[in-house]
Image (cartoon, rainbow, N blue to C red; front, side):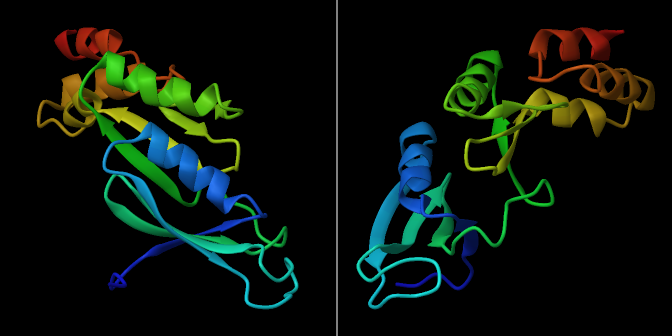
Amino acid sequence: MIPKNTICLWYDGDALEAATFYAATFPDSEVMAVHRAPADNPSSKEDNVLTVEFTVLGIPCLGLNGGSTFKHSEAFSFQVATDDQAETDRYWNAIVDNGGQESACGWCKDKWGLSWQITPRILTEAYTSSDRAAAKRAFEAMMTMGKIDVAKIEAAVRG
């Protein structure tokens, strides 16, 4: 059954590689179908992979091999809530060590240019806390980080 809403992500010929990586990296993720171009088109030839249906953490996605016209930007990202430092490290390192790039405040970019926020739940709870002083300390600590350090966020909350 076709989902009512699907995130369509544009790739330059490597949608299947990306979807396979996401399925191997994140739970509740899988490649469900690969569709090949029925004819030549501006971005590929007949029988090349045109679209890939997959899920990332249960979110339905469609990878479209649309060519080099459009690139991913930070205007879209997947935000992955993690439960502890080990899970944060696992996802961050999987993305960065597979040709990705580190960024700031828990953001990184995969080798296809798609942005990810690897965000420990403790960080979100801290900066949204009704204790505004603790929220400020946690937020200011986050602003100095690449990958989020859970222990430093917890220390900032304690003051």
